[in-house]
Length: 186
Image 1 (tube, rainbow, N blue to C red):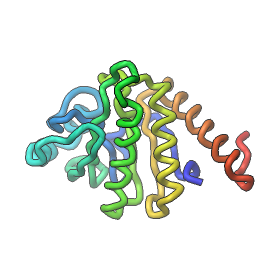
Image 2: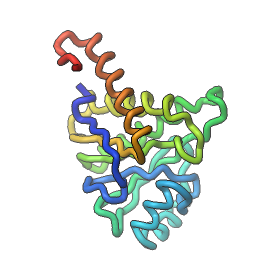
Image 3: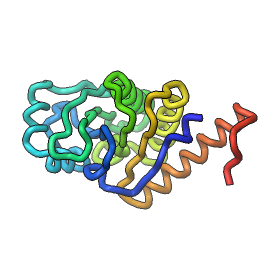
Image 4: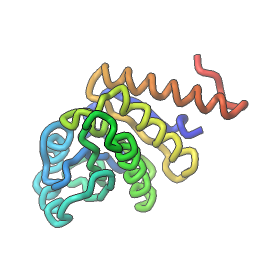
């Protein structure tokens, strides 16, 4: 079951003691507001310098840098979609962000990754719509890929935490329906 290796926490992603954290970046990778700005501030100037050399990242894809002054050794930067009403491929692009980050983590031999809620801040993607996409993509990936041991959804507050808990419970129910041996949810 992919969901058994997913955790959800209310925490500061810049303080997570995992191998890699994900930055919900903009296309330039040069820092911004929200989690992007917080990661850049906590990592220090080395991160900005490395990001300048990368020359950006397309929406839906991911790139990796060092973690510099962060507890995490690596930062995986992904650019989520800007919400434009839901009819412009936003769901698929958001799903691709999670998959790109997970693929990159595994290709680097990483076993732990912490995600923020991608695109749900300044980019306006509705949290209630984003959470099930994130959990589905992460659970599906973990079901296929044994080398990644733990994925953590790091939430900024209770609203996001509760939304991701509901999404995880939904994922568990869906997996229970497809597998008669799955444990029941209380």
